[in-house]
Image 1 (cartoon, helix red, strand yellow):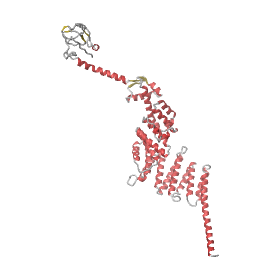
Image 2 (image 1 turned 135 degrees about the vertical axis):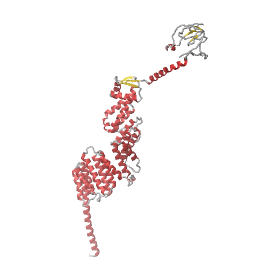
Image 3 (image 1 turned 180 degrees about the vertical axis):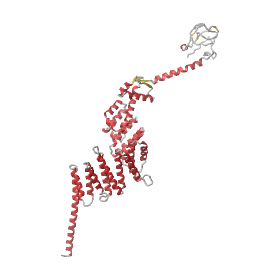
Image 4 (image 1 turned 180 degrees about the horizontal axis):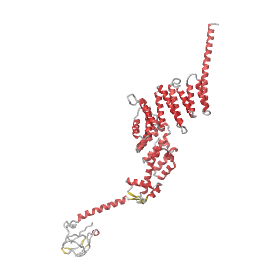
Length: 531
């Protein structure tokens, strides 16, 4: 055999040997992959068998690798769904051992985040039991222990924020407060200032703290954090985070009866929730409609581009009907909508504030109802508005005290007496006139001066008077003095004042005499006085 033939034979032998090794390795990888996909096909039909198959994938691997990591993930999700929480925790702890070396850092971080999100959503489901929450908390604790030792600060922050959210849902405010302090320190520089590179995490932490203060009604701290959160400019937060911050801000403004700012915040919250695809947008839209009524605004809240698609949404139909009835001042329709949709009051925030809207509606209705009347019964007002007599009395009392109605309530007889403003003004004018008459009288009738002639300034006197021609003295009686065919008569208004007593006498001069004085009655012309 030549050297070339020998070398060729050796190459073939070596080639055959290498091929057999590769084939064995490939067969093993194919078996693992097939087992994994076979298990996935069993997930829906036989989840218990699928769990065994997924766990079997890890047993086939000689060294920890991607397929074993994937198999454990699927097994944990199924165990959680079947409420095998202890097994899920055990296998999750095993899964975390793959993070250090078996899979890449980015892949492991993304997978763990997705796993925690999945478990979080499953534990928040309506049919989830108490064990689901405890299992989720155990997952968070194991994750924090694992990634704190690997110096993966980003995943440590994310997991701690998720844990805070879980504790907040449980209303464990003491633990939440302690965790939040720890998170705030993690987002600060050594000098205590905020780290701009962690602005997004800082906003998430603010959102959690703002939620806590909103739930505990600590408005002082809530306002401080709310303003601080809005000043953060170094972050590009998830729209859901801004939705939470704005929603809590709107509730804060509502507690201060600052309806305008509340409406602005609720609109921004709705817009952010809508962008994030969060179902909370529907609830916040209800709050937006609520503030529209509290503002007593006639502007249609569905005129904006963001809210227009939800105009006919069945989930907010009840609130839409309330707004429509409110803007039409139809108190009966408003009451009917509330009675038919008692689920509206299931939200504590709406239940707390809808009473103010209802009172505004009834107050406007009472004001319109009593406007044409001067006297009416409280029982009739109550019957017209379908409310109790006590509430009717309270509303009328409020209108009187607020100056919107001029009237009084006879509580013994249950009667409301309304003073017409027109009659009141007329009566006041008559009283003013009566008060000024004595002033006019004093100016005209001065002691010993008498009436002045229309044509001159001299006191009116004459040759003839009471008691004789040209006589003087006190005037006690006034009569018709006929000389030259003249006559004298007393002003009717003076008679009404009982200022004079009618009698008979004679006077000189001709013509008509219409006024008198203590000096007598002059002749030769006429002097006229009208009171």
